[in-house]
Length: 343
Ligand code: SAM
Ligand code: SF4
Ligand code: SF4
Image 1: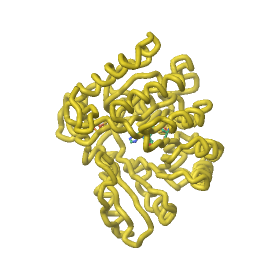
Image 2: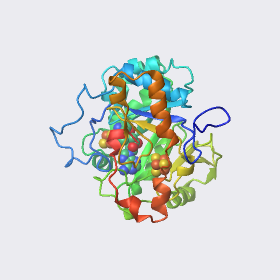
Image 3: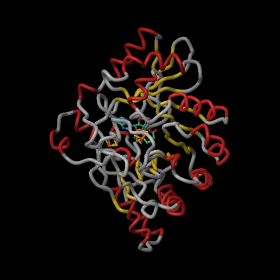
């Protein structure tokens, strides 16, 4: 295997596997139009069954193997991960794994006020709460009419009161929520919670993406800078995807995730595990590698290590970079949906 000096595996472009995103189920209590549009996921939609979900034993075992290959950061995601029964039990297991220095969770926040205490007690370090607007109507539209803004804000407060680090993820869509972003920043300035604006991405095939709906982070940064001057910050670590800024007046930090206009494939060190146990090496992949099949067929740890190692070793994904250079071939292929692999 090709490895770094520290003996960790690297892919064909020299990128190590540092970060594993674990989707714990594909269901969600929201229907954000940019992810799970209501018309495509109506009542009665056939999501994965419990038997298809990886069990906590299976997730723990695979996590150990990813750690052997170099992973040190885990993020629990979904669908909506807080809908997975007994989630704090999984957190308590994962936090004990040797080699993990960061354990985080991404949630829409609807159930957070109820669960934050148990998650913190189980050892979770941080939560990222997705919140697209502080305007009730815009929020309602962007959660597919399912979410309550008050509930999400309460979830953030309760999580903070339990000592969880908080980031806010805001997907930006032109003409939909871009007129409400300064209000959102106003709300969180000075709170210590870092807001990160995410360019609307062409993940999946169901969300009617087009470039005109993307607000380039540059444009947004200039708008914010005109109101509250910003100072750029260095990356915290190699492979960090957010471009970080601090308010010049000391009111805290914000970030931009520029997946469309300034892709960062060169540093992409993320592996993804779907709820039904497929490994994906890119958000825009059209197929994954079935690890659950191998697990349930009785593969040994060595065999799983070999299988996962090979997938990483052969990885050459750089979809966003190719898209930005207008490579039409990459735009045409099928893509896995975001709710399936968790973003
Ligand atoms: N349900 C949880 C949530 O919303 O936080 C976790 C899963 S969700 C798929 C993970 C992240 O992906 C969220 O922050 C969401 O806003 C983001 N996301 C989903 N679809 C997106 C898209 N088309 N472009 C950019 N970000 C997207
Ligand atoms: Fe659900 Fe998250 Fe997708 Fe919204 S972004 S539909 S909350 S999985
Ligand atoms: Fe990583 Fe794929 Fe996104 Fe590039 S397009 S940053 S390889 S997930």
